[in-house]
Image (cartoon, rainbow, N blue to C red; front, side, top):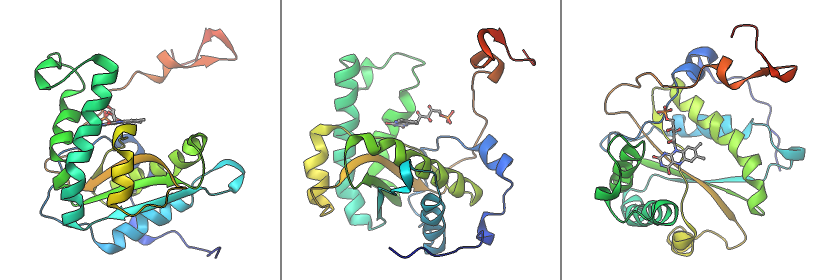
Length: 214
Ligand SMILES: Cc1cc2nc3c(=O)[nH]c(=O)nc-3n(C[C@H](O)[C@H](O)[C@H](O)COP(=O)(O)O)c2cc1C
């Protein structure tokens, strides 16, 4: 394996704080604007720098920007998304999703995945337990593309479709699939996120002690 020393890429000059505090799930992606190859390289380079268990670097990424392949993948993603909702909630279609549910936008993404300009599938060389070593790299990708003004969202698939996904993309059988991340320039702006305050999720020295800013 070549270990290449890299300087920080100039394309990633957005302050880290701005990228972290404005990163959010972007599901409305412009189907007509391709992701430039320099951006793809940057996000993969950023992923390669992430922490991982024992520095074993098990993450492997498949970049799909062939529109025909993504169109073929769309129905598989749709099936996987609904299979998860069927397993989790017994839902069969959009009429089953309660009003105000956070699943309404993800359901739209399930309809639109086939139009994404790019999808990255994240794998590892061995076993489901490697998901933890893949996730920091994926978060680096999400932050890197935020700095480039590109939207993305971390998603998963369902076991029901994996064989067909592996066949569609000629993925070797010894790879383990973990995450599916569509990318595209946002249709609309990034908007604010809504999160619990850190004071409500954090403890100080002992569990019964609040943080000083509570
Ligand atoms: C493990 C994981 C799985 C996720 N799966 C999906 C998914 O299947 N579909 C989807 O649209 N978003 C998915 N998301 C994105 C979350 O819905 C999103 O991060 C969360 O709602 C916060 O959104 P916001 O950053 O826009 O506030 C997933 C995120 C994580 C971390």
